[in-house]
Length: 512
Ligand code: ADP
Ligand code: MG
Image (cartoon, rainbow, N blue to C red; front, top):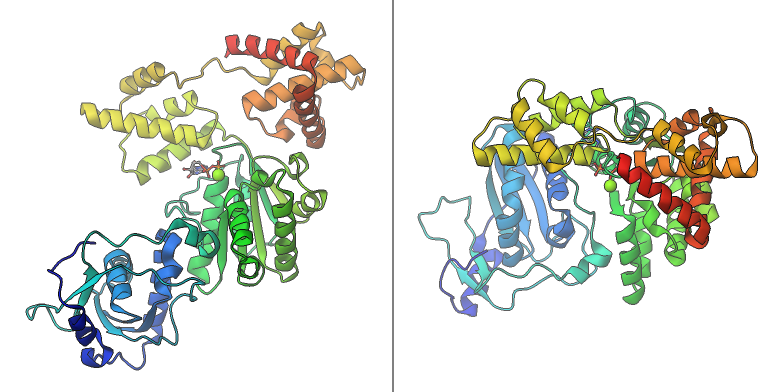
């Protein structure tokens, strides 16, 4: 925001900014339709810039939206100016797109708002150090900007200091593109997708909590964002809290420091209808935060509020996590996501290309999908890199270009090891027969080699536990989970095991 006019005297500010001088009377009643459109526009705007939404919208009141005129009341000029500069464009665009009307904002100033858009934050509003005032020039259309603009006299007013958000932030940012509509469903993720739709209120049976787990870059965060978007649009009044576990820890620590535990607890236990916690594995070892989360979980669960948690591990695999939390995570549904199959990868590339307006020729999609197998993030990254390079060189993304680029970037992994490769290698290393690993033989040395093979497959191939269970003589996925866990733990304190693993990993490196 820039100072648009030379500074005027502060006394002018008071005179011009006074509500009585502005003399704007908002419409007494707004149409129901207008109110609905406004609520949706607000939800959309909040998603776009959630970090400071409450901070500013606690100083704004909605008075009506009729025939394209949006009547708003601001607590003071500074809030009005800020909203106008940073939020109104998004709000207006949304309303214009959804009502077809061109939007005019009509402002009034009122120090005592009785129905602010957002709850009043628990900290004082941000103030510029000096303000300057200018009357609106006569030629500006009346009714649109018929109040004065007050701007910081020098640089843009600084955004509120980050500490403030530690306790009061409404939500972490949601990616507007992470919707259900943009999520490609395939066998690898259909359970998690269906369960997420249900958690968002999509009709079928809701599981509480919903625990979504899977390797990195497979769409967990996308699904929780999609839940938030969907709830927002279907039930704008629902209070959604989306937060990463890491941030939950930070907020908790901050609240303790600032002696604001009551606010913190209210936010997670009372003022929440849907709790979405991303990457819960980051609570590992944080006992006090786990305790706090446990109580929030119980309060919400008892109140029938939906809880969705994501994790890179199955609940039983979560390290340094209180047993009572682990068991609660299994109360509802544990839905795992696996690396997508070829067809799903092709569909994902098509979808991303369409979303990013990237034109791909012929069998380019298939070639990318065959070359990049590990996760969707890498798939996306490859596509974006190709598009950027093609546009820089002014070339089309055809098959030759794609082949050359992928080969040059080393993204392609045509010789990636398979489960069978790893099993063969482990057998060779421990001097066993291939059948031993898939047999029911529980002899100690065979069991150990089997566990090591399972561990390496899990590390290297990003296969799901059930898939691995099947590949190792149709064992249950929980057997694989405990095997992987055991090897992880041995690796950290048994030098002999570590040496075996390192030798095997070196060999694996040479065949990958
Ligand atoms: P995770 O949280 O599991 O690490 P993300 O949800 O961040 O993974 O996904 C990584 C990227 O891949 C995101 O850009 C996401 O939109 C995309 N993505 C993942 N799965 C899918 C899918 N099934 N359809 C479309 N995009 C997907
Ligand atoms: Mg994630």
